[in-house]
Length: 379
Image (cartoon, rainbow, N blue to C red; front, side, top):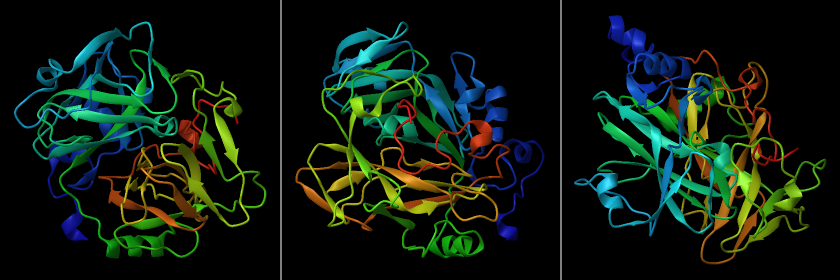
């Protein structure tokens, strides 16, 4: 539509892309980073940090173990609040273990220098969420986690709390990621239905109401020997920078399909499950899963909610990748049924199509995934 076209010209159009509003794609982020605009760092960026629609954020050289999680509120910086919360300081330059059940705050190597129409939203990386590591972004004067307000200039911090496995991290480890948005774009259910009619977003019927519904697969496809994994307690340390080196059975118990088509989620246990639907995100769009909806049950789904442009997508072919679900029950046991809706994907357009969409061409780990653990584990 004409109203959606980028009507500003010159340098601004070159900087942000075709449209006036939307998520900035990777090649635009790369251009801005090189120009030291919007996101800057105390050390040189690694090209591998730039994803199709986000930037991986790196841990700085120190972590502070704190008594409890906190938000600084509108009148304080994070460092001012840390004064009464820090228990001890940990040097990360040579690597250090973050213990389960503890809360840590780590300054990041990246800072935000946002323009007045630019804001950010953060989430754990997929591999972080699949390790049950609860990670949130904090800014100075923040009143909510994982949000960087328009026009914010200042440092960024990660709050980290491993829930099941102790983790080994070091300066430069990447646990969360930042999407940068220009303006306040809206994407309605009507637009989502139109997009699904043009390019199928899921195989089968699309349930669209406040986003695209996804349901859980507890039957499997007949070929799989199990439909999920449940994390073992008191397992060994996991090095977050290690790839394909761990035996899954040292850390996880497989969940076999039941004849009743359901499983009971035990309180405070952590599960990896998969969606019944295969998903495809067209290259000019990005999606995010709503992490918890109290109307569907007493459990949280999907710590790591970003779905990149191109995820599960191949032009002219059906959707090719399942959504892997990180599930944790709260307070009481909960019976989860096969086909039960467990979350919804909300979509947003990018300012232009990314040069490199998610996929095997850029080394994406989860492009054609079914039920899949994090990249730390051998297949």
